[in-house]
Amino acid sequence: MNKNDDDLNRLRFEIRDITVDIIHKVQKRMEISKQIGEIKTKNNIDVEDEKVESDLKNSALKIADEIGMNSEFSGRLLNILLTESVRLQNIQQNDSEQRQTHLSIFMKAKQLQSMGKNIIHLEVGEPDYLPPKNVKKTLSRIYELRQYHYTETRGIPKLRQAIAKKVGNGIIDEQVIVTPGGRFAVFSAIVSLVKSGDEVIYIEPAWPAYRECADFIGAKTKVLKTTLKEKWNPDLKRLEELINNNTKMIILNYPNNPTGKILNDNAMQRIIDLAKDYGLYVLSDEVYSDYSFNGFKSILEYGYDKSIMISSFSKGHAMTGFRVGYGISNKKIISKMSTIQAVALTSVAEPMQYSALAAINDDSLNENVKIMRRRLGFVCGKLEKMSLSFVAPDGALYVYPQLREGMDDDIVLINKLLDLGVAIAPGSGFGESYKRFIRISACQTEEVLEKGLDVLSSAL
Ligand SMILES: Cc1ncc(COP(=O)(O)O)c(C=O)c1O
View 1 (tube, rainbow, N blue to C red):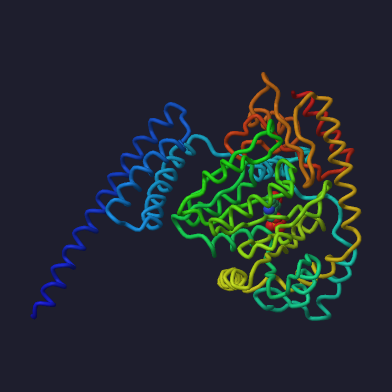
View 2 (cartoon, rainbow, N blue to C red):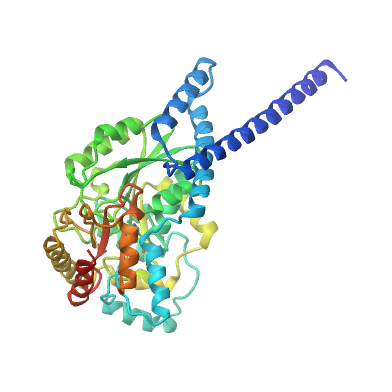
């Protein structure tokens, strides 16, 4: 053995001891975290406390900086520890209380229906009208035309070209990926661009999938809350305060589920400027953009290279079960999303891609938008009569009213309504702090909406 071998062995022993030490310390940290979780559960204290977390993070980062540790790495390491504590404590709390969302209420309602109960569905964002007639024709020809094979992972060229043409703004087919629903486009964009320990910012109230995707990969979520009082406008100063070395992505969803809000051009531009300044990705979920009543500018119009636009055939064309959506971005990002899609599912089913192609330029879309606008107006009128506060939606399929003082919290009310045969989504499914809200979906005829809302009115 020469001196080099001696040194190598000694250093390897040292590194092994340190690694074992780290494991012991992390385990100890988790045990303490569980004890904190027990106290929180017993005393009904929220798991997440931004102040406690940022104090802890700041003091640890300060030391990391003093000893010359890379700040991006130390931030990510801390985030992994913090996220794991939150996960453990959430498991403790959820043992006694499962979070209810529009989907869990939908499942409950379906179960009641299978037992013979009549249910009016005002909880789910699935339009009741038919997909375009052209789609029926296409589906009937698919067998003869043998359009039922594996396709390019990114989607058949004809559909990608048609999507590129529809969205305009100089987008070419190589910037498009066809996905099984907008949901998978959101998932693959987040998974391909964000790592464990990175941070993602989204704006609440929000569709729960953003958080679920981030949690799935162990990324940390930072939430910018908006309020009815501020007409659901995000505080952009606060948004900037949430950005740090570990922030990788801002997620936007306008027209918004559940509020129906559309951000104005000025606010969008400021968010994009912030993203540019800090080099962040902007994921813009625009699955409701067909239903825009007061003007809507897609993120594509801002020409920001690190943006990813998501859309879908589910809502505008009433094709939820076809599972066709798409993502648009620069070629490099689309290629990353495509890798995930190839690993996970090869391609979207070919018959469904041809169905989407048949739907893309169909006139029924205009009619659908008119119907939805009328229905939302109808729901707003009924809610006004109940003296509930809300902001009239600029788009999407929903109204998100606030419950008056003295009324039950959302979950208690939602369960009462289910007993009375009406399913409505609880506000807290879109963020813990929205227990005083409910979301009403206008995806049924006015006749059905009226029946459901009359039950709501008497329950209130
Ligand atoms: C905001 C938002 N994004 C994406 C989706 C996903 O739609 P799909 O996967 O059916 O295209 C939904 C569905 O409700 C949604 O509300």
